[in-house]
Image (cartoon, rainbow, N blue to C red; front, side):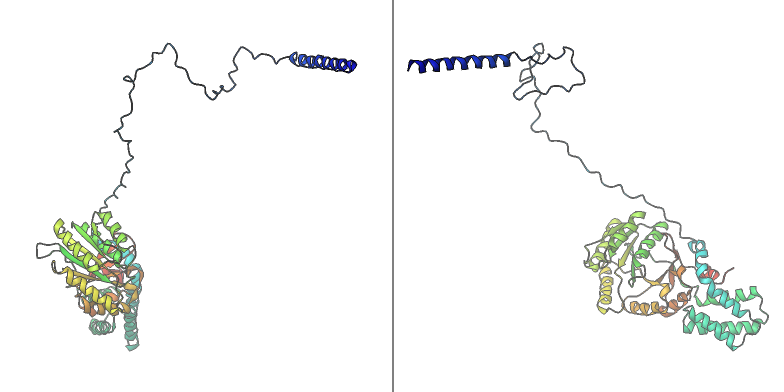
Length: 400
């Protein structure tokens, strides 16, 4: 028993010695070299540990609460103000006097076929019945109309018979005289914008979809501004999307204000407001653009009559202009008849006259309605709407 106890004591002593040797060997393991005393400028700055606080240098005096400027609780942060878009530059329209003469080259390119065709036929040595029939066909093809064509041919036949010899200059002069006569040069072609009352002149523009009516209204505003008028526009075409935007853009270019309403609103109400505001502002002219009524829709045509009646509660209309597309030819006469039944057309605007060789529509529509062509459109440019001048038109028709 004593021997067993002694063995256990010896074993414990041996284990203790061995443990001390192991611990000692670990403590004697060499430590890594100390960092250099010169700071490494390429090393990133040491980040503060969690809980570290920046210390105020002792030489800096501490400020009291009275010395610290606290933010004003009532002050509000500055709010960025969005600047409104710059107003478009006001354009100065081209003068209207002599505008058709300046655009004559554009007109003659499309109309010369008619004039040259007639001169060629008239210059034949023998003007027999077949030749006169060809002359008649040429005029009918140019949309002059049956009755005006017959009258023109009869006059030409009588004068050629009396004239006898026919030089090119004589023939051109003869044709010019007869065309001018049938165009009724004594018509008053001025757009009426001077009201006999103490109100602005009121002009209403009507026409079928696709004739360029809203564009023509915008160009007419330019014509009036070029003549020194102060214009207010009424965007009463509420059925065509963006028609009011289109008209307003035209107005802004020349400084004319546009009175408009919601899309699909009552056109008569907008026309009424436009005239009212024109009176209040002392405008010279109120120009009302109406919706492009299809002449086959009786209800819409009746509404056009309503617009006219509502506007006349302020003052009588001074001008009702019918816009027709010259390229539609005789179909334009059908439209003209229906519009004339609803409102009293006082003048005609023929658009796209530069794009058709059927210039005879000028003669036909005047004869149909008994009212003059007052303005003609000769291109896409802003100042390509010109007062109609019969002499310049005929000169472009038959050439120099």
